[in-house]
Length: 393
Ligand code: AMP
Image 1 (cartoon, rainbow, N blue to C red):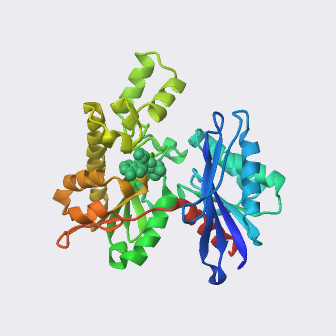
Image 2 (tube, protein in one colour):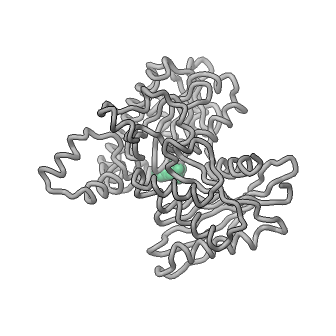
Image 3 (cartoon, helix red, strand yellow):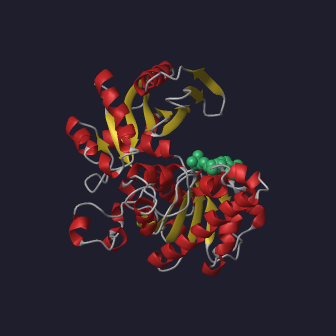
């Protein structure tokens, strides 16, 4: 596989993120280019960068450009940057693997059909993840494709953590907790084994705080509980998603306010969270810079909910040895990390304020019973690694 390249794709409803990796001798992966096409359906915009952040290509397209047109343009861009390497495989982030797919899977027609059947479990994400797989299978049938699942890392959760208190037959039918952000959590679990091997063997909560947000309780690097459940709506408050909600609120909105299921879905996914509470933005930077009391209220609620859910996960773990911050807010918002750590003081978290202001690495005080780390995540690198490992069997 040396002299080959692997492409990682992460396709959503209006964007496709990508990262291209060269397979080096010894089978390590080095990033060659990364970027995204955003604004699909409104104002499509391709931006590709080299590993140092330099712009390799920037293009804008007509609003009418379809997902398929833009994917073709992206693949052409990648082909032009292979530098003499062969494209050995394309790996995809796929949100739902259901109960069948725990490990990344080489895509066949049968696998694609099984993944299609899971679309009702993640209607806003799964179809967008699968569309590029289908398009590439049609245009480049010789390129192997691998599906990597956001749910996969959580298959080690015990039944207690995956069950709702619903009638047993419903649980058996798949209405249960799955958990998401698994590619990010797996990347962090592997990084932690390198950065802090003793801690990695212990009880750790990882906080993936991006536009989507969740916590994962890991014992010895394996997921034992997580805050997202049946869908990516559950758990923490997020950029535009509500997080956990009394299910009675949904009934009230439908029965008393006459909202349709589609309207409730739009509300809970797109108009709640930081955006809904602040009425200003879903962007943490904007809220931290604002002196509007509602911006502060949104940040306070975001932090409160993390503290509350972390307490629950500490119970699932039977104690806490470490806490890891990752993703956009976790990696960059020092005031949010400080406020979360203050709430976790009772669990033995003591922050080193200077280290927290610097960011990446160990940010807890030397005498802190709980080690606190900032570890940047890299879902695309995890996809590429899985893709290579799957091809090698
Ligand atoms: P992600 O989904 O991982 O890309 O994270 C997006 C979130 O990270 C948004 O809420 C951003 O406002 C937030 N974010 C990114 N950079 C910073 C920063 N320097 N300070 C605060 N929040 C940030």
